[in-house]
Figure 1 (cartoon, rainbow, N blue to C red):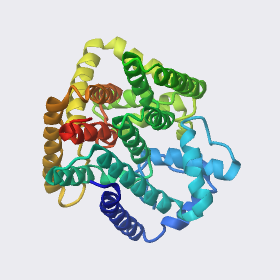
Figure 2: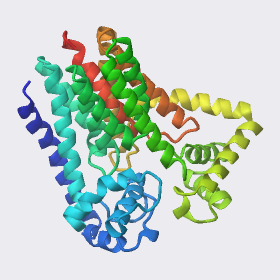
Figure 3: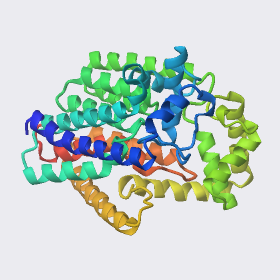
Amino acid sequence: MRFFPLFLIISFLYLGFSAYKIHNEVKKYHKTAISNIERDIKNLENLPLNSDYPNSYVGFTRDSYIYLRQAYSIYLYHKPYNCYRPQWGYFYAPFIFLFNKYFIIAILIFNAVLFSLSFAFLISVTNIRKKLLLFLIVLIVFLMSYNKVLSVGSEPIISSLLMLSLAFYSRNKYVISSLFLFLAGILRGEIMLLFFVFTAFFLFKKLFDKFLLNSFLIVLLLTFYMYLNRCTDQSNFFYWALANFYSEKKGIIYEEARHLIVNLCYKNKFEMLFNCMDCYKCVKKLLLNEVKNEPFYALSVALKNFFYNIIKLFILPFEKYKSKFKNFLITFFSLVHFLWFLMVITSIIKSWRRNLLIIISLFLLIILYSLYAVFGGLDASRFKLYILPFEMIIVLNRENKTA
């Protein structure tokens, strides 16, 4: 199917829900969404780090506040607030310069258009001809992704870059594919691991010029993250792992576990949470001591969560619903995700020879994210958007004999 009609249809869906989300959330928060941005832009220290804070921001998650603080600091002082993922500050700061207090609405619209464009382009290059299958793919992917696409976070951007990379890869445009993968790797460190897989593929295929290009890009990514990791851990793995381990072991809620860690390592200063090497070392030491003191308990928790995470990512990554239709939404989205899972599995079985590199990359990400939350706390609906492009290309290529 041609690109432009697809783009119009898909963008209509995402932009329609963007308008609904903006209208609904601004109305919900008594139309203070704009004025609060101007207030917080002058008060970086008190910008909340909790997505449950009674704020008025549209489409925000917990990580959104981290990125927003970096962007505000670049806007005000022409430098990042700290060294925890400063690249996202540079990504979002232009929206503040261009759109001022309306920049969050501009980001939501940008995300919807970029994701729609990437989605439509991925479909168009695979030349899928079965209209019923195409309709199912568009509908299911939209239902699984619209809430995360319409947010201020890394999910829609990374997913879009991965779709563009895979689209060009499927057309044997390896250089362009590598460049989009490189951009995704700059913004999300784990994408760098996919570079090693793709680089090994180029070496196996004796595409030495592509191999050399990817090797050079890998060196750039490694240098970039080694520089950032000098002052703080960019993944924050040990912090999240310890918080979830305390929550599991002590039978306390997650927020109580976070406060326990803050009292032990951060001296009651939440603003140091993502920019403190001594605190990072303290958290790492606490987690390793917990594992050493109760190795069998830690192993049992890790194994349970590892396999549970795989199931959540691959089959049932639905969100936590709070509305009066909670039970219906859980049932409905469980069916949607399970239908998609069946489509992915049958597509893997049918076309695994043609899609071997994509399938390896897919399972590499699933295993990586399952290990990242090995003590619990995996936000599967969020990480699903990172693996969705690989599932999409596998499903789209099932009927494409030339893929």
